[in-house]
Length: 255
Length: 255
Image 1: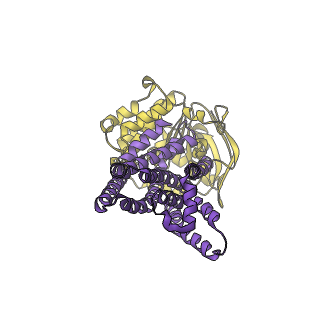
Image 2 (image 1 turned 60 degrees about the horizontal axis):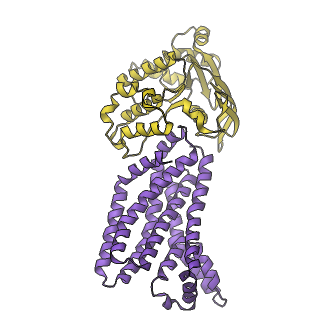
Image 3 (image 1 turned 180 degrees about the vertical axis):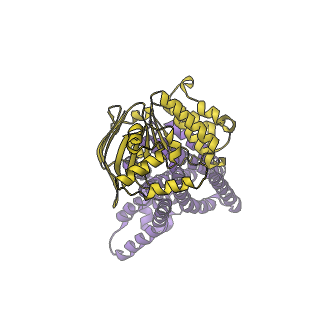
């Protein structure tokens, strides 16, 4: 569904994406993980056409993304930070996007709107919403048009445990519908039950791209966090980041 | 295009700054007409307000609005919509709201108290300047990388057009006072929309006689049909060129 060929991106001195080639297919739930600044968000933004790579090509369903913008109809995107015009009402955002995409009412997927009980706040202006509520709105927007590809940037950051669980359930439902789902997250325990493939990035390079079973077999670990830690130590990557991730988890805090 | 700009407009019309700006203009214009017995004197005071305040507010408001909407613009660019359409929708939303603020604040008092050629010239200049500086502000915000730089750049442009430019023109006129400069000053005025607007209105008032030979030449030129077309044409160029540059830059920009 998505094919990335040799893309490079440099922001001044920093090589953010270093010759990345990958291809994602239907039915995969790909977790993009890596330390801060490893190029995950830039890769996602390149797929969405927000960042223009210096070289290389990206295809979505065999359509070159630079040719025109129609390919974005197939994509639902949930950004890391969702900010909306202050005085726009929550309901207006949904109507507006529906008008832009020109999709009939009955084809909309309103599950998340219902489960997050967003109808109650349809008349509220955006500036009155808390960060977590805005995150719920962003999630509902991403799933609204029942897109074949879902791109979620840190979806559970800022959500309360209940909402986070609702969102995870929804992702599982979509996974069963044979969609392609790309997720970046730092909370590895959230990814455990969802993911089928892992793409680990560091300093703009893809260090490995493996499916979950292969990873579990190679490492003998069932938990994603531990499996990755093991493989990274074995292959001499910078394992500081993953150590930190595990440290926090062992603190006994609840995620 | 209306699909997006309608909501941008809805959002801005509820903005407190725009409401305060409208009230400010209305109170100032009304009190000018009340205080001065002679309505043409009031027009002269109003002229200075229009030439100084309008460009400043248009520049600053547009720049701040652009940066506040940045995440929203990002989200829009992940939708099946072209970048040109997104920027044009933002432009029309901002400019329509600033124009209506000007029309309500200055337009109505002028039409009530002084509905003559000078009045219409003032309204024409005010509307043109609003559009010109909104367009320039879009260019400044698209080019600058962050909010502080964007606002700084916009302020610098305002200083240049409102204050520094006149100084430079005077310097040129003094240094070359031995030569016939009438044609040159005519050209120089076209290079600054504020000056162009000032001359255009002044010549509609009966004070051009005070300006000597140059004034007579100006009167001859700007008073004629060609002069009006010339002014409108130059203003239009001042609106279109920065906007075109902004769109061109925005299409290639990384969001």
